Amino acid sequence: MESLCFYGIQDLRYEESPLPTIEQNDEVIIRVRNAGICGSDISRYKKLGPVTPGNIWGHEYAGEVVEFSDNVTDLHVGARVAVCPALYCGKCEYCRSGYFAACPELLVTGAKVPGGFATYVKVPRENVICIPDSVSFEEAAFVEPSAVALHGLFKTNMQPGYSVAVMGCGTIGLLVIQWAKIFGAERVYAIDIEKEKLTLAKQVGADVLINPKDRNTFEQIMTFTNGHGVDLAVESAGSPITSAQIFALPKKGGEVVFMGIPYADVPIDRFYFERIVRRELHVYGSWNAISSPFPGREFHATIHCMNTGQLQVKPLISHRVPLEMGPEMFERIISNNEVFTKVMFEL
Image 1 (cartoon, helix red, strand yellow):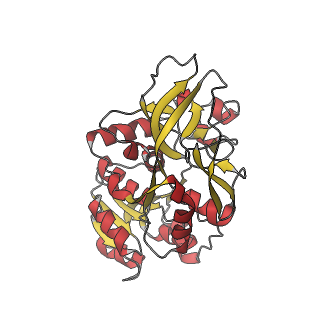
Image 2 (cartoon, rainbow, N blue to C red):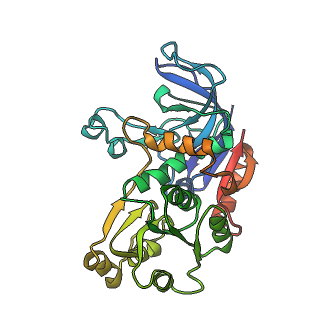
Image 3 (cartoon, helix red, strand yellow):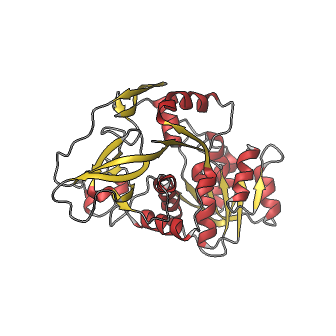
C-alpha cells in the first residue's frame, strides 16, 4: 500500500508498506480516504524528528471500515468513520481515574505504531467513531483537531456573552473561533499577522480582525474593550513571542488557555508576568483532545456540530493533494513562501 514514512528531520518518504493485519481481538482496519497535516507534524518534520524512525506517519484521518476482529460486533464493512488517534496505557493512576490526557505513555498513531498517512490503518475499536452520511470524509479528517480546540475551551469557564481573543489563526485558532461562537461568545477577536488568515477568520465567524503589524495587539484589544480586556484569551499560535503577549489581553480575573506549543524557550517580560499576578488571571494548559468516557465528549460534540452545519471546516482546506506529494508539501510548508492552512491528502 502507499504510505508516507518519517525517517528523520526533513526526511519524509513516499513508500510501499505492508498491509496491516488483524492480530488482537479489538482491532479494526480502515481504508483511509482523507488525511490532514497537523501543525505538530510540521514541528516534528522541521525540528524534533520522529518518535520511531521509518514509521508510517499521520494522526488526522477518516475512512471506511474494511475488516475487524471477530469480537467486534457493532461495526460493518463499509461503515464510514472518523478516528481518535490517541493511545493510552489504561494502567496508570491517571488512566484508572479517567484522566486519559495525562497518561505518561500517551501517544497518537503515527508515533510508535503506524498512522493514517497510508492506504490502510489499523486501530483499536474504541478509537473508531461512526459518522453520519452528511459528514464527508474530508470533514471527518478534521474531527481530531476540532476536538483538540474544543478540549481547550472545556478547560475554561467559557460562557455565553464572553469576549474571546484568539491569538493565531491557523487550523486550531480557526476552529476555536467557531467553537467560541457556538458557545455563545458575544465578540471574538482574531489575531494574526497574515491577511489571508484573517480573511478566513472573518469567514468562519470572527467579529474583529487584528493584525499586529498595523498596531500593537494589546493596544488594539484595550481600545476595543474600553480598557478592560477580554474574558478569555486563547494562545494557538505556538510562538514564544505570543506565548508571553497573551497575558496582556484578559481582563481582571480573566482566563488564558494555551493550545499551541512553541518548542522553544518563552521569555516573559516583567509587564506580562505581572499581568498574571496583579490581574489574578486563570491560566490553563490544554493537551490532546480525549476525556472520559473515551474518546470523550469532544469527539461526539464535534461530529454533532458538523452534522448540524454549525462547524464549518472545508473553508480551512488550502490544498488538496495526493499522498505521493507528501514530501513536496512538507518542504513547501516549511519554506514559508505561500500561505497554508490545512493540507488534505486524498487517497
